[in-house]
Length: 154
Image (cartoon, rainbow, N blue to C red; front, side):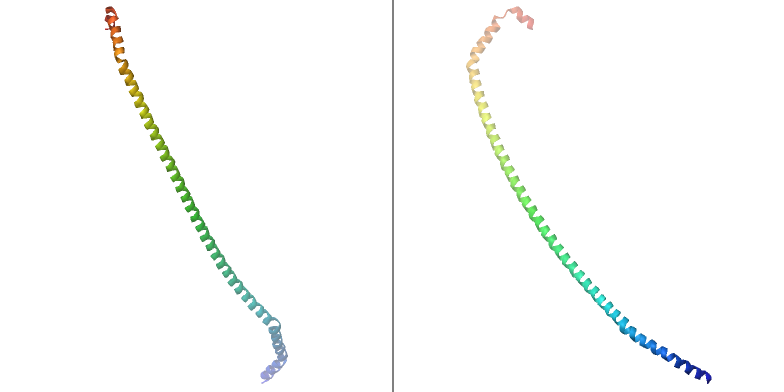
């Protein structure tokens, strides 16, 4: 039994150390671990809150981006519609100008045809009027030429 007696004596000598360790552990829990656990929990809560805020901000930014994109698309479509309307007006104006030009050209052609027909009628009347005179002059010229001149022509 001396071993048991030695063990009991050893435990009695270690008891103050065990008590000091337990007191130290309680003090460390009170002074160090509890504040660190609270700080870590608070930090985790802040991180989760910041993540939630970031997600909300990202969702709001995406919504604003979609709204901006829709407004931009609407403005672009309105601009295209205005351009198409302007283009149609320009095409209509051009068609009107071309039609007017064709009408004026047709009128000028008709006037030219009438003028040419009048000039042709006047020229025919003049030719008809001068034809007997010119025929007589031509016949007289042919008859007055010497006979030897005509042989050379043949």
